[in-house]
Image (cartoon, each protein chain N blue to C red):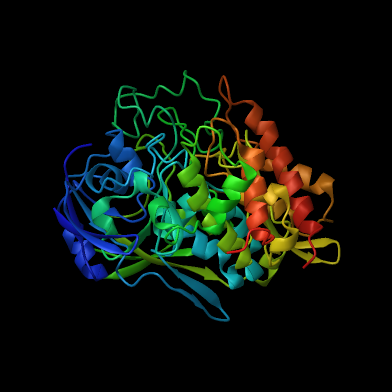
Length: 173
Length: 329
C-alpha cells in the first residue's frame, strides 16, 4: 500500500506491504539502520523511536499506521555537527559498550529527560501527586524510567550517569 | 504474519460498520497486543481498522466524573493531574505496568481488551481452549507458576494481565460502546470481562464490531486514600504475581467502606466484594486486613506451581491496605 512517512523532517513516499513494521521500513526501505532490531517483540527497546514527541517501539508499530505522524530516529537527533546533549552525555559518561542498544537508549533518554522536566511521576515516585524534581531525582527513578531499554553489556551505571548529567545540566543543550 | 488489509477511518460509526459482519476484521489501536500476537500467528485478521483517529482522545473532567476516550494512551491517563489527585490507585496501577514506550502506545480501550500472557495461548503449537475452543489446556498440568488461582475453570486458568483494569474495577468505571447499528450502551466494568467457565474463548461482553468509545470513572472522594501494590519477579517491566488495588474510606481509625481489587491471581480483573463488606465498621488494623485477605482468597484453587500465590496475594492485600491507611491525603 502507498503511504507517506515523515522521518527526521523529510517526507518519504513509500509503497509497502501492510505487514511491514516501522522498524523494517526505516531499516530496509529508507536505509536508516541506526534503529536496531533486537527482540522484534516489544521486550528490549532497541527499536525505540520518537513519534509526535513520545518514545515508542517501532517493532510493534505498523508503517501504515504512521501516516501524518512526525518520526525522529537517532539519525535525526544531532543538529548538523553538534551532538544532542544526550548523545554528548553518553559519550562523556561512556554509557555503552557494544553499542547495539545505544540508539534506543539515547532516544528513550531524550524523552525520559523531557518527562522529568514536565514533572510527571513514575512507578517509583513516592506519591503520584508530587511533581518530580530533576535536580533531586534518585538513581532508582532514572533506572525505572529507563527500564524499557535492555543492555546486554550491562552498561547501566554509566547510562544512569549520562541521564543524570543531562538532568543536572552538566552538559548544556 | 498473515497478509491483511489496513484501513483508517475518521468516525466511530464508520469503524463499527467496517468490522460488522466480517468476523476476520479487527480494530487496531496502539498495537502492543494485536501486532505482537499477529507476529506469532495467534491472531490472524484479514483486515485491521485503525481506531486511533476517531476523536476519542480526550479526558473530560467534571465534578461528578471523568470521561476518558478509548484512544487516550495509558501514559496520558496516568500522568493526568486530576487522575493523580483524585484516583492515585489508577495512576499507580498504570505506571506499574510495562514501560514508558509501551504505555505511550497502548490505549485505554486496548488495555481493557488486552489478551492473556499465558505462554500456551501465545504458542500455536500448544493446546489452548481460549485460542482454539475444545483443544484442551496445556497450562492445567504444565508450567503454571504465573497462572490464576481465582475464577479458574477446568478449561482455562489464564491470568488477566492488566494492572489498569484492576484499578478501574475498584473505581466502578463504566465502559461506553457503540454497536454496529450506531446505538450506544454502557457496561459496568465488573461485568465486562467474563469468567472462562467452559467458554474461555469468549472473553468480554462486546458483540463483534462493537467499539469501546470511552470509559466513565465516577467521582469517589474516598479514592484519594487509595493505593495499588504490585508484587513481581523484577522491580520493573514485569507482570504481577499478585497485585491489590485498594480504596479506604476512613472515619478516624474506623473503616466506613473499603474496596479491594486483585490482579495477577485471577482470570479477570477481580473485585473481592465479600472481603470489602467484612471491613465495614472495623478498625483499620493489620489484623482486620488479614481477615479480609483470607476471605478474598478463600475460594482460591492452586495448582502445581502457583500455590504460593494464595499466601502471596493475602500478604499483598494487607500491605496495600496498610499503605492506604497510612497515606497522607
